[in-house]
Length: 385
Image 1: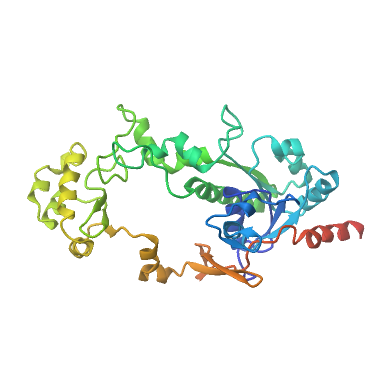
Image 2: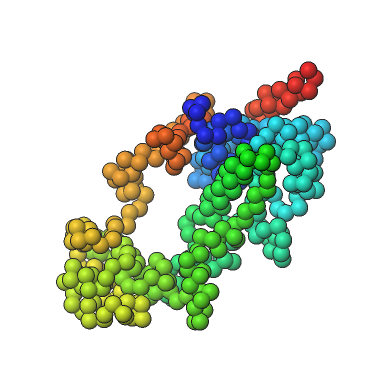
């Protein structure tokens, strides 16, 4: 990490586990902040034991390192009065604090926003929950798949006639982390002029609504209510034909917004033009059925060579091996190596560039409690001086 990164000199305390909170803290670390995880002495962040496909680095799961690279770890039992007192002293030195406990938990511990504000009025306090601090759902488990299901997102995916289809990754956790970082940075800017910290609340359900704001706005103003998924090639229920993904003779391709007359010309299919542009939504299933029939007759490369030079928005549908082998992937250079002792693994780098440089941090996640004495011992020495 270079010393002139934007957040160099800031201290962030990461009390969070699993994904949204730790990913937000990770991004702050990527931007130069010192990030200290506060973990339970017995097992630490539960993500340490969340092993996927038996992938590990040292004693911890590989996914733990992807969320927590470059951080420090302090082991502290927040139910132990002595540990809690030391953590409160540490909070007094921090600029940002992040947690994702359920509403009310930090208040019972004595680390709710009001209590922390009294300890450190300049601190920016970030709280992540599943459904907000109030309401009948506040105690439900805030897990990505569950929120996708409750929010209607699973009913946006897939073709008409399919069951609900969630995304294949924790979309809402990652997006919520981004919103938390935005709020934290905004409060830090305000602190620069007022000297006061602030409280940033984000939740997965609000993120779900925000991510679908385009489609949800259409729903709010649609007298028919629930959007109707397309019979095939569905990608957005409110986009007219030919928008969607289609099978070709050797794979699949995506075709985005395009005038039907131009599509008909390039596909050499007058039948498409007969519908007329004003029917692009009213007759979308019929139009897309014709497009699908034509595209299935030749390879993806043939259609890309026809459509791309003509300025139509289209793309091959790639799997990960295919994507990772492309020149576009190589040009982004998005992969970095992280190391823990003699072990090494590949992961992604920070997607942000600062002053033209990509941000990389080769340090894996910390060993549980590795920095307890260095961090808290420094506080004890200061207190005794």
